[in-house]
Amino acid sequence: EDPVVVVGGHRVKLWRDLEDLLAPRAVLMRGLGDAIIEDLTFNYTDLIGFYQPETIVVLPGNSEFHLRDNKSPQDLAAALRELVAVDATYDITRKVYVFAPLKTLLHPQDYPVIEESTDLLQAWAETDHRVEILDANPLLFDTEGNPSANFFLADGVNLNELGYLRLSMLLRTQMEADAMALAGNNTVP
Image 1 (cartoon, rainbow, N blue to C red):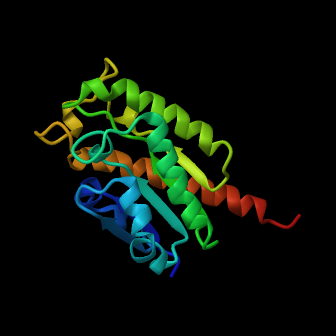
Image 2 (cartoon, one colour):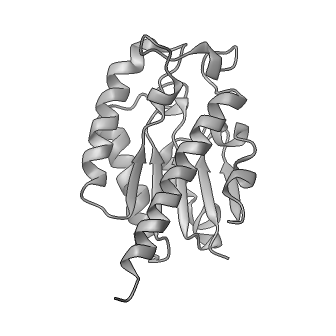
Image 3 (tube, rainbow, N blue to C red):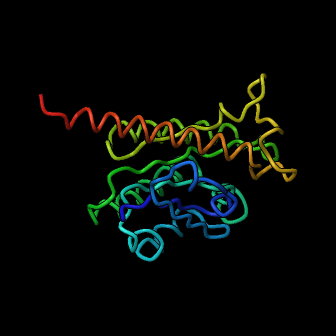
């Protein structure tokens, strides 16, 4: 009941041990190969809606900018807004956590697009109380503010175990803070 459904592409498939870190919450990992956000929206009913999640976590992948698509920051923000709008029609999900796109070692040319995307997503989240944007990039940087090889696999795109641990801890910390805030709002004086 009331699971946390984590959706995205290949990065979700590689994300191990999140279930243990978020226990006792039920966590369902639903990664679709090189999926882009539009794929998640198209498959919403089977991929997300069927489970009637209390929480959705969206981890956009490298496919948004390479392989499958070449999104602008505006395109990415629009696609994510559409996914959340489809979810809102079911009126079940309480919170949607969206990870900002990750800067990678392999694609430094994407950094300006990722920064603009993150700004647009954060501005959108300020207008929708259900949406929280999680920017894990600073947690994956070296001392000079660039992605650190310590958190990536040799391919320079996908995170290693330490990188995923950082994502997991960021998500868990935000979920706990939100739960405490909700509990504080529900107390009777």
